Length: 253
Image 1 (cartoon, rainbow, N blue to C red):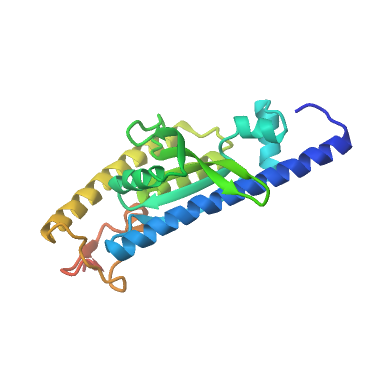
Image 2 (cartoon, rainbow, N blue to C red):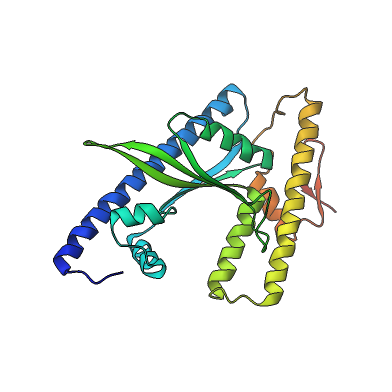
């Protein structure tokens, strides 16, 4: 980043902060759209494909650091042109088919423009990472103008999200110099997670067919959440786990 006069830097910092606020509003716009879709499906179709939604706004320090690292001009124009991960939303779904269903519903909206799609589910990264990344543009209506804001949306299953969280922690701990045996173990875990996703969706589809094509009714007070089931699976404590006739998780004697 070029050296600038302190007074000029203050002006630039003010403009960048104002720009960052528009990205926050962009997150709010997309989060609202996802919330509406989730509530509509839950109430009208009694099915919720979205388990969890989270968001994050890149900090000013991170923006500055990336500009220095990538040689991006530290101006609102330069940042908008070269940085597409300032505003991020992560959508966690139950099944892989839900990911594409949410993608289709979101990108078909008239005021959402899909700029780029990277499908790491169909083509996983070499380390096993799987997710669907969408770079979308949404209009934000301000008091004096309309600003088109870019938001990155990542869609994952619970298994994909759990794996990615673990991978991130390991790479952070080892400052990206991860021992070979851990890299191999992560790849194996990614394969297991993919197998789990496939098996869970197959079971879900079979149960749905047996219920006449409708989502089976569940009692939240008696069933484990998908996150709890997955944590049982990964923790290794599920070796003696059993399910009773009502779908409740029990322990073997």
